[in-house]
Length: 563
Image 1 (cartoon, rainbow, N blue to C red):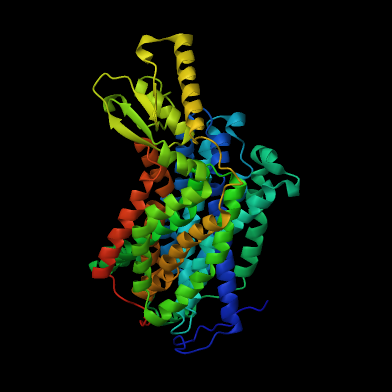
Image 2 (cartoon, rainbow, N blue to C red):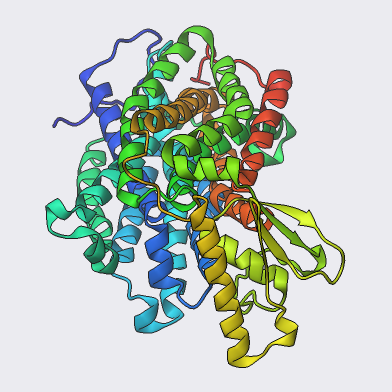
């Protein structure tokens, strides 16, 4: 594969050059390396339930799952700091050098996750090491995206930036799909591993494979040379010596950063993470679809929808970026609730019938009820009758409505026409108390099962074409908001501080608003009892982005990026 031919005396980017072999190499090397980084990053998301079992033992089931999501979110939390560190380097030293370093950090961190001892082997040191590696992954990803998007955009012909950078936009979904495919292959009986062995040791294999992908990514990226726009700045002496203070210390640029964040990135982030990651968790955790089936249905939907990243990137070159992004946010805000309720009916019809015909209500004194989330694992949720009731329902991931009862009333569960009263823990102790709680849980389990709750989704009842169609629609919304956004962010900021300026708001939005969405969504569900309650978060953020974007966000698709 030949080296790119670039020269330091290039005065400016050609305005109407056609795609060359070098540009195809640029897109391939930049995109494929970023695919590998997203693969590394999202492996954890796919294996959250297994990670919880291996590294977070000792917590109750609900708390363990939410804590596992928070460990997943740790990588997102540090992404803005990676954006600051690597964005500054990218604007001062160069785009190419920076995203070679980010690929190296990401690949090594992921490989080491596959080598970690479990909680059973080394105790609390295991989750600590896991969090540290997740944070290194987040730092690397914080520098990767801005570098890849900027590098490709600065090589793109005028009028084709949306199309060219949409290849970078594909990478997040492609990395997720790649991770899904490898997880499916490894856990499949066809490979000789199977589900039981996968949960025991096979989960390490996808992590260890990242060492191979790291080698391929580095080989490709080492063939690249620096962006001509950056070369031009260096030759003219116009590159920034203080990109952080220029980007965020001067109101003229800070104002654009804030508009980009609230008027585009925030909505894009919550739509992306709801349409892909949260949908996957919802299928497995709430709708009880087995992991292999859920992963397979999602990867089919991703494969069908992924070309639309390119379509909307191309379309944004013709009609503009703003209207496509905001249209995707508006559609998401309007259709999120009906889409996921339709997903319930298609993926687990028995559950949908039970919700309609035998709704579950918790009648309790609110003062006795806790949120069912305890980060330190000290609360066994057996101190009050309300906690006993809600703990039983939280473990079963059963949708319920809260009904206020007079103070001092023993909590009860109403399942259709049947009412089951919880034991009073204040009047019981020791083995008698444990036996009473166990008997209550068994009775609730039996009554729920009788009307259609609790059972795993019946594979014969799953309407697979409809499930794929709904998932496809959710990912299509993702392609609308995400396909054009890299080009828009590149066009919003001057080249001397572009890497820094676009990276920080992007990673605050996608790292914090988006990355924390699964944990926040499931915590909201655990506190409220309504399995759809967590969707208020993305709906409100997407709606707010529509309003702010319509008023303040400029259109950028005809701007030059050479200055």
